[in-house]
Length: 435
Ligand code: DOR
Image (tube, rainbow, N blue to C red):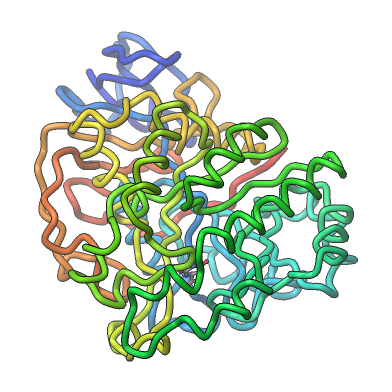
């Protein structure tokens, strides 16, 4: 007897949409086709699209340290409401996840508290190289996170010789927050009190490009893989499109949707993040990257901060905005408006994360693969409202936006954990496995 059958869905299989049934047993896909066998659980997916489980490869869930803004449980609830079946969570917590003890602590905090599957980044510091060498044997570790410029938290590795040591000492991929610390320090005086529009002047294009050039130079010289997170400038798009291979990069949904100066006029410090939302020429070139598949992933950089902190006067206001719940509605709406195709999105949030980070058994609807699915309705219209944000921070930069296309069910390890916006059952996410 099968545990679950997804019936008559339009399923994304072998890069095509095809109407099939999917049979699930013990958390895995065991049959695809016209299924005659029985199950107590049937999910009728007629008229719906069944995608492989979508993975958000950049979220900050704030536990331990700032659990008033988010914790692993609340962040994972926001994820599954948003159709996300797995997350890579960032190490800039308090204390940071930069030693084995803290890493194991995160794994135990996640157990039976996270609804979605998960992996954690190991944070690099100038002094923890000896910790980085055996990360391949560490359960649930997706890679090393390196902050080349300061952002939220204390993690920072900005000297070239220290960055080199991080790459040399790990066989995991190094994902980089790429802003140049020296330039950030030199330009900090440009951040004008009370004027969030100056955020992009302080953290300017040169600051991003200079760091990205440095990282690419080091990674290529050492023949190591680097993943540049949240790329925001046209200069980086042009540079990175000439340096594909060992180097991969991410773009966020907010940089593909919000544009300066309007976003700062509308949202004030709620639009403040690192690296910043920039003007139309950058926005256009990010879309040019998407059209040409220059970027490899789309990640939300879900960075919840409490409203009371976001409302502090700039630059005392923290940088970051939530996004794990809205990644799919935002991007599905872009698909409906003709800016990208569904098969591209599947590459960016299912297939490429699997290839780049070496996740085992996920990213594709195939026999023997894990039964993680994101079920979407491309015609359903929704309005994002702060009150419906599952994250503890209870706000979204997209409050009031109407989107067409939204997740309607999230199936994780063969169990329906979200249906029609309702969370079902208990948290049973598992650590992802890596090659
Ligand atoms: O704006 C940001 N906020 N950028 C980051 O890189 C970190 C994040 C956070 O953790 O708040």
